[in-house]
Length: 466
Image 1 (cartoon, helix red, strand yellow):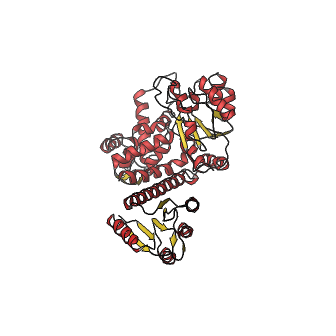
Image 2 (cartoon, rainbow, N blue to C red; image 1 turned 180 degrees about the vertical axis):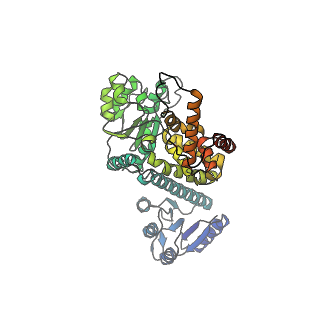
Image 3 (tube, rainbow, N blue to C red; image 1 turned 45 degrees about the vertical axis):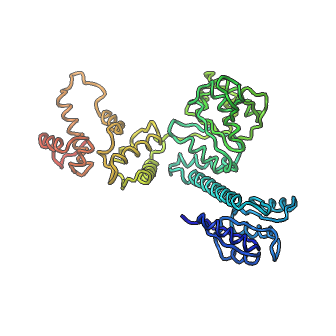
């Protein structure tokens, strides 16, 4: 662990020695100076400094003036100002210059040490929060949304245009298409990116509790309300509120949400106090709200309030060219998080995945990649690693080649089945260059079973499949 570096600037030798001794015992690296000139020399030659303790009255000037030099050199450095001549003017000046705290001599050294440790902890917390925000913003940059297909590029083009506005956005798409990911990308690329992004799933919370979740409540508003509680609208102040599954809102809450959108204010449950609402709304749903409006299940006026900027997220089956990119992205992710060593996927296996309809969309793909990477752990993902239900489209295509009707004079069932079986085997063999191992994988047969069938049927490589 690297020892924090502290700069002490004071013209009293005994105090400098005492501070050096007590901070050194606590594993801090301490540099002491007696005047501004020495301090400026230390600041110039040291690239890192976590904390400064500065006396006001120094032989060669005002110690408070040193604060500006420290702040320019070290970003967010906490500075504790010491003085033997306390006055309101000095305290105000020190605060304006960015001092963390102000102490009057004489003081208890243990109190100073405790204050210094609090200042360092606060600085660490500020740094970690800053890093977390940077990570979130980097994670939700537009170029981190995977896909080169025309369908997803249209979505990216749209959110780039609307991200830095305050317009209400309605994101639609099937479950698992990444509606919340799009909402976060909009938020973290907007002018509100340093404020909260607060999500709430309107379909996951009972309607009798959802009003309190959205608008908060006061103590005693209902049974169990033992204290005041902020709602999501208040928590999201100056930020973004993401209303997922908005189509599941009850008629009563639809009215209340419409009022908030119109008037930009609300009242917590059980309170007469009105709270101003500075919140950007991004709503999402996987149902057809236009149909819900026609059926009377969703208010038409609320729909128009939400649908200022509609963004439709394509289903994965509508952007199949993105499947290889998404697959590799998730492989890298789970290799990293689970310590696996998957090197890639066989083209035949990838072809099967690309032909699958993915009813669960990207969420289903991610879950599948996680599962197969855990089971496989290392090496290449082969066709045999892909469960049989992913072959649904290919199976249905085979039966499209069967005759739609039985001839009036009938059909020889055994001959027809045998001929169809021959066709399947020859198709698989020709597709794999008569590689019996790969053909067996395509047909999901044991290699020995396939070889026996080839011999029994007398199939030869010079035969042409239909």
